[in-house]
View 1: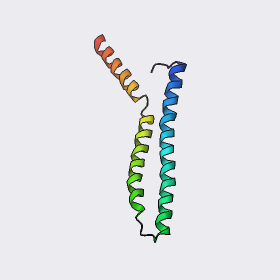
View 2: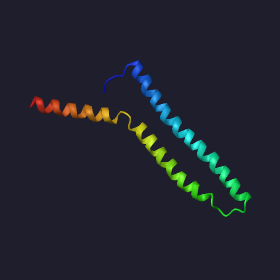
View 3: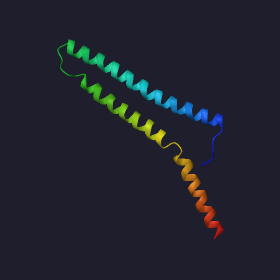
View 4: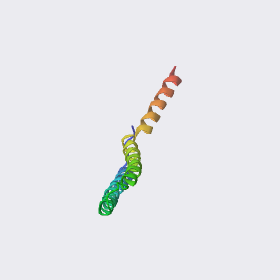
Length: 95
């Protein structure tokens, strides 16, 4: 793998932090809004209608989390695959 320059490292780190912060903000808003919806629901008789937005938005939040952290864990995968292909092509050329 090629070594990244300091500006490249900074850009990559900033991008990763931005992705993580986006998910954490989304999760915080999800919790706060759904607590509010549950409080309204229980104050008005508690028919449990708040579970529908909780479940639907929860699915969206789960997908957001999966995509965010899968992308971050896969960071560098493309570069590793590219290096592997370059090495295979070099070996084929040397035959």
